[in-house]
Image 1 (tube, rainbow, N blue to C red):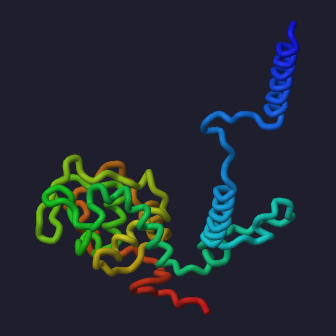
Image 2: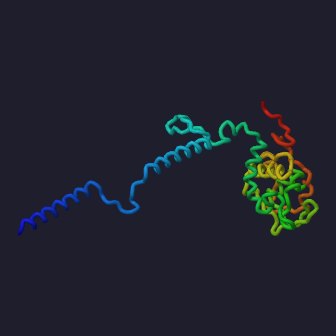
Image 3: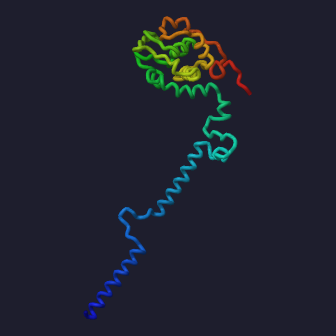
Length: 239
């Protein structure tokens, strides 16, 4: 073997060793596997800090006594309207707020604006059935209504009639919804309380829907009871 061939083989071996060393120092990266740039990581951290601050504000702010799971006492409820604030809330405003949610079961027929559907579902806005005697209104919702009725001088005959909600709603929920419809869309009337609903329920022994003629004696009759707040309140607010 010549000297030139020996030198060539030696150079090739040295070059292979050099390439192997380079590979050990730095591996080739596949396309798309490059490391995330530092500016992207920094931006994500800034966004997380800002979002955490906003979330804390919406939940009443971070408090040690609320977040610490090892406290012996019951943690405070950070939700708005809870705790002492809920106990001192105006009963009328509380009923209106909860009644607006409960009205969802009525809005499909009487519509969100309380105007109903001509010929089928009577309006609640300005309705004498809503603004009239509280006893008739409670009885209607308790056991439903069937047959032709007249509301604001217009005739209505809902197919199958109005369903009964007495079994599906508690006395409190029913009172809240009735208070809501009596004070929405321009209506203004006294609130209906849980005690009023319970009084009618205890006296009413019925299993079928009412008709307009059967409810005529209760058209202007109000269920007795104190009205804690709102229009026509009879209870003096505590000071």
